[in-house]
Length: 280
Ligand SMILES: [Zn+2]
Image 1 (cartoon, rainbow, N blue to C red):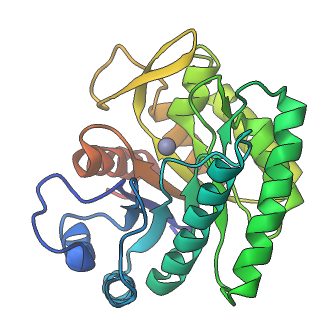
Image 2: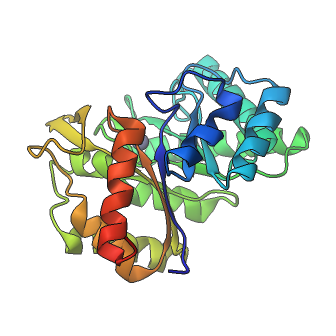
C-alpha cells in the first residue's frame, strides 16, 4: 500500500496523563499516526511547547492538525465578535506554524438573521481581513480547513465549504461525515453517498487528499445533537462503505475520531481499514 491513510484522536487519548508536548510518543505506541490538537477554549500553547509538540510528532511520524477555538463566527452581525474571531484564527495560524500542523480546522460561523448569500458576503469580507492580518504578521505556513458543520443554523454545508476553498488560497476542506449526515437528516447511507462527496471534492477542488472527522451522530430536525461511539449500531453514518471507498480510491485520507472514545475508536477504525485493505 503506497498511499497514506492515517488515524488519530481529536485531542489527547483517554488514557494519557502526560504532557501534551509528548503525546505523540503515546499515539505512536498505541498504533495511531495522526493527532488533532484541540484549542477548544482558546489558543493557550506557548511557542516553546508548540515547537516541542511539533518535534515530537515528527520524531514519531504523527501527522498533526489543529482545531481552532469553537467561539468563532466569521459572519456575525457584531463587529466585536468578528474581531475576536479574527484574533483567534490569527493565534491559531501562528501556533500551527510552531507545531507544524498541516491543517487548522475551524467552524466558520452561524447565519443568524442573514440569508446564506448575505452570510457568504460577510464571511468573505472577514476572511480577506484575516488573511491581510496574517500576512502583515509574517505568518507564512498555514492551511485553514473550514469544517462541514452539523447544525442547519451553521454556515458550512459541503457546497459552502468547497466554495470557501475555491475562493481562498491556503484553504482546504475538513469533511466531518457525522455533521453532513446530521444536517441532511441522515442522508449518508451507503458507498454511493460517500462517492458523491469524494467526486465533488475531486471535480471542484482537484483534490485527492482529505482531512476528515468521523463519529456516529444523533440528530434532530435542527441537525447534530450528540456524538456516539463507533459500536453503537443505532447511529449513522456507516463506517464500512467509507473505508471500502478509501481503500479503492487511493486518496490520502486522515481520519480524526471524534467519538466519545477518541483513540479507542480511532484504533477500531484503523483495524477495520486494514482488514478491508488486506494489510492485516
Ligand atoms: Zn468535527
